[in-house]
Image (cartoon, rainbow, N blue to C red; front, side, top):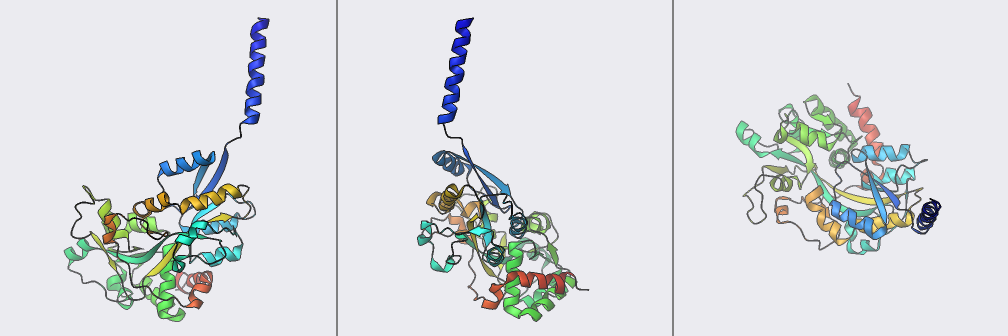
Length: 349
């Protein structure tokens, strides 16, 4: 018995010594918008390489995500954030929730797609917020497509349209900025009020609009605010899809009405107050690495920021609109415009 106890004691001492010499696994918490998706194998490889565990928090649509980060800035709930974009960056900068870090990989991102020089957000991807329409619905009902935003605000088309709220959704905010850029503030508020009175639906986020309200998914609205790459996603997820045999056209298409599109740049950044700054910087670099950049297009249906990243052939259905120059005063303070939209449109009678 004494021998057995001696052996057990020795094993306990050895186990304790081993625990002291083996570093505990570090946890990195990353908060993202709800549409974030990266191959789990890539995440696992990052964890193995860095002896770490990555914990993800879904923070809602990008606008909701930012609101949550601002409310918790005194006690940050994550180390890294992915999914804030160029329309939300001014507010994030003003709130002081990010700390600067410029990834060396930004040298491979075209200057036009970089989110400023302060390193608060490193561009990971870009896309074009645009109106999509359901081809089959319009063909079946014999309805001509609208040709302008002025057409879209009339009851004939407004009642067919679902968009997202600029107060809670990054595509919704991008569309708001596009309309202000096109009409000016007074004209934009007039357009939004007319469209809502005509029957245009405003939802909280992109997922509800696209997966619940869009006619392609059983909803009532054949025009939806989404992305110029969404028609490519419709082809990709269709039964029997193969890159070697692409269909003649996608079941949805873009409605590039003048003044309705907006270039969206999404980024990854480090939250101020993180206790894992070194690991957070590695995660920023990871999001700009070649394997992740190549994985992004057919998972989140946006374009990878790093130039030269190979693209799936299905992206032939992802049209790129003619870029629109955004006036400096429109981009300078998006939150002011959101507040004005709430007063002038949402609460207007």
